[in-house]
Image (cartoon, rainbow, N blue to C red):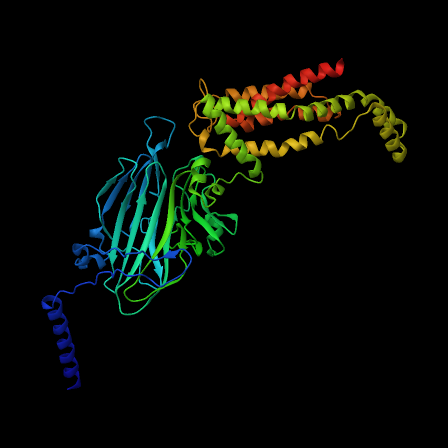
Length: 534
């Protein structure tokens, strides 16, 4: 009897739900109410007038269904790039840079960014804490294609009506002549209860780039927090995520030449979590400050996005210390002025190779007094070597007496054993700074010099300049006064060979700098030798 009763009740419930599904009245989704939010939090604001959705949008219940079939792509074409946005999470699917190509050829494909992200979590996908905004929601776009034909900014708007009493709107604003994109994310509360939470923007990046290219030598996660650059490789977050929450200016992914980033607008980034997701991709989650939206009110979180080249001028124009993403090592404070100087001379001569030569000549001139002193000291030390040998032999059993006699010899001939070293030590930071600025400068990428050198960021295809560089290094070493014994001198002669093999794979721009520097040093040494002889 009880078994039959349970069956009857179950059938009754099933019939009731089936009847409601097929014959019940259509449920209308509430429209966002145009009113102000009382929330006061950093980076979060309220629109003066909450824009209302069009009737067709508000009455479309399919908007709340994460159906793959409803996915749509929107193309945005500007003078600098062609971007493809997806209605899935109102995200960026790819962005093609019109002024940069993958290979050094006019027929090569334009650089494509974002296309290698996790296909389930595209760039700038939206999530939320405290609000039900899972991955893969389908938004409704207000356009199929946007073309920026003049200097007027254009907007692309995506709407998602949850069916749970709230609506999310993402408004992308594009400006001609800029790689920066403004993003306003709005939450409208049409329910009868307050909404509390935080909005998130998610970016993903491959753990190991599929393309084997030196462009990915330094690929990883980067962010600027607490007035310092933070970087992570996938191995750094393989077992545990990392979280940053101190004065975050921007966060994103970058390789040697290009980057994608989310920039804070008036403190709109409260924290960033970097981790390895379940699909094996690098994942960066930027979260806004917490907010509460009362019934009938709305809130807006504003960020700025950047997807483009790591050109120091372009990065600096974005603000938020984005130029700090151009990591030039310990001597950044010297390397960045070199980079600006390189671009300055290029603006006049129109050739980065010539700009490198000009900088090399200027540096050689600036350091001439120090170098002159160094070589003069070494030449003086070389002259007194026979007398030094006699003193060592005479006082070989009395070290104190030998040291005293040597110091008197130095004083008599007015030479300083450290005089040949200290001036060279001063130049070491300058060399490393110039090395970094030439090695990681996008300005040299695909930049031609003359003849067979068509890319100053790539190696010499015929190894001509590295070999000439090795020859000049050998000549320079033979001309340089030495205080070493014969065995050590023979070992030092092997250095040009070692350096030649090292420089075979170095960027042509760096080899050019070293080659010109060697030639100038040879001329300088000839001049100094003549002065000392006279």
